[in-house]
Image 1: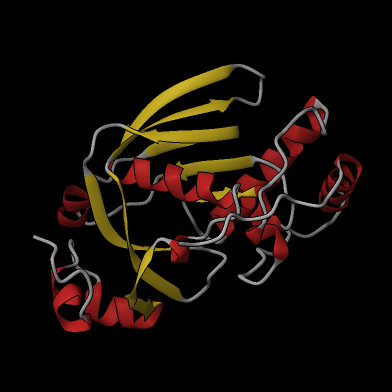
Image 2: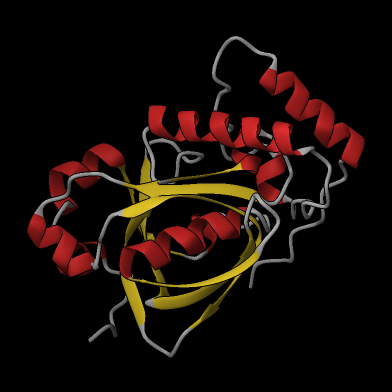
Amino acid sequence: MNPEPPPTSSSSAQIREMVHELLTSDALPAIVQAGHPALRQRSAPFEGQLDAAELSALIGVMRNVMHAAPGVGLAAPQLGIPLQLAVLEDQFEIDEEIAAARGREPLEFFAVLNPSYTPLGAGTATFFEGCLSLSGLQAVVERAQSIRLDYTAPDGERTSRDFSGWQARIVQHETDHLHGTLYIDRAELRSLTTTSEYAARWAEPGIEQARQELGFLPDLP
């Protein structure tokens, strides 16, 4: 069992200074990689550390970084900012067979503050996934097939939404970031592969071939 991640040691003033430095830069910020402490600490809940204009500007920068990467989600800790904020969007064109097998449908852009999720039912889905903060790697992760996400929208409204399929995977992945958890903590480690090996060998709708040849999840039906 993985230990509980420690809370961030950054104060509200320090977080605001980090954001101010990011927003005044002429270049898009770099995505921090595994080993950076912000990825391994429980981020601070959003409690008004930024005013509405600063929050909107930060969300805009995060969306630009996500698009440039490119990716389908980005959490503030991935920019070194230990704040419970993430942006999500999936508009990629995907092979129809793969999309159907993974339950992958377009996800319109939205931003979340202080999110938490609850599985809906016992169903799970098991697929490869990657992370912009573990560049060049992929691994198989079993996640809840359907979840309910409770979060605060940027306008301050507390909201609840249900997600399933690949959208649920994205939501769980990004919410985990805000609590110091990386997908590798939940992964089948024998499935760990470089992105190039994944593209050459395992980029199929499911995981059956990889499961047999790499020797993970032997009891999966």
